[in-house]
Image (cartoon, rainbow, N blue to C red; front, side, top):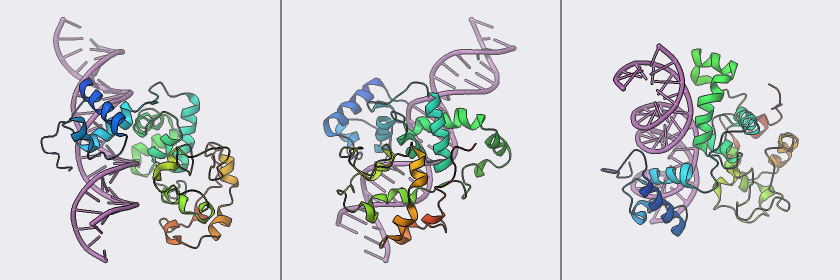
Length: 227
DNA sequence: AACTCGCGCAACCGCCCACAT
DNA sequence: CATGTGGGCGGTTGCGCGAGT
């Protein structure tokens, strides 16, 4: 992969970190295939990207997870399943890798129902179609007709991972941008009239069908606060 | 002090998707 | 439409380290 013959693997040295950091600061994130050459690193693009996103990126919170974060993580996992990047997007400063590791290390052991599953049916824990919202619809949210009057956010595909904002991270303004819905306040999700908005769809309808489910089948009205 | 064991986390791997050509 | 490429993601691995014996 990546034509990575002879590419260095394993732990990153401080020198490599500095090279990568200065490269990203100079050229910005993205164009990861160019980063190894630009930075003078004998690493593959994916390794560079991962090191930056999970370790070197500013604002990463490497402290212990707070109770609030853990609580939110559990609720998000119930809603999204193993969509670690989406979950991490709701936890400021946390990376998908951190969330994934924390879940696998601590939470999975603590949840009694899942502990039973681990012994008997480990693969089924997060794959229950009736309780997990698949991610696909979220990714095309910016194409929804009721968002058409918004600016073109097409360059910010992962915007949904940024605090639930459907606008570009740099452009969004929570107070003014109606494309916001605060996932942290689940009542908004619950009360959002999905059917009404979906009825207005005229394009890309097929993209809303996920594993024989339509948007109306997606259980946004589930009571996330039940345990 | 030496060894074993278990845990946590950083990093890799393989796959998928979007987009350009 | 088919193919190639880059970006991104989730699953998994394995190293390093601390605790226990």
